[in-house]
Length: 200
Image (cartoon, rainbow, N blue to C red; front, side, top):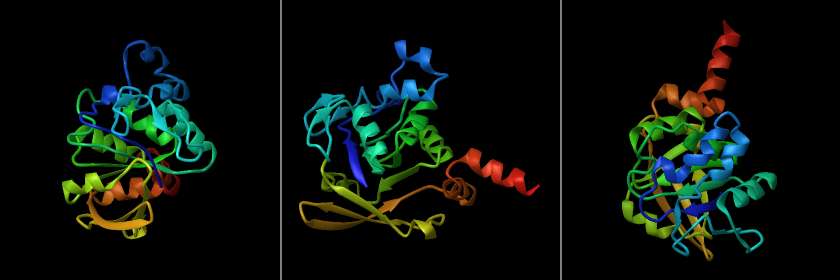
């Protein structure tokens, strides 16, 4: 997976999905997704809403690059710092990354409610077993999550970070229980509910 953005410092739900004038689009996921991560600071240049497209090499807004990757079928991951997703429990902060092709969010730690919201959307909220491994990820790194078909409660996820020809193997933690793993396998909690309803 490609790194969409490596966030520097605090990243609240307002950094992930800005409020204000954007709230008028709450009923239209594709429109409101144009605010995704526009308030987050990119560690590569200390700027907001300016990241490098790893395919074209051009700099653009975060939602624009995410849409480019999605159109090309490129899965992406976002990398965050401590207490990622703190603040108001804004569901769009979990809906938007999934809508624009995100697969995982890897951080030092999560705010609990946002972590659960990500799980409900079929995303993988993962934390570095060793917080210092945050420094191994560069904006141009490629991330591989191994053995997800064997995802189990309490079992760490193996991760490979490929940067400039070097491969670093690290461990990631998760807090999924059995029910939440079923959400992930189904693609979201809603998909899982549909599966259960179809059987009854």
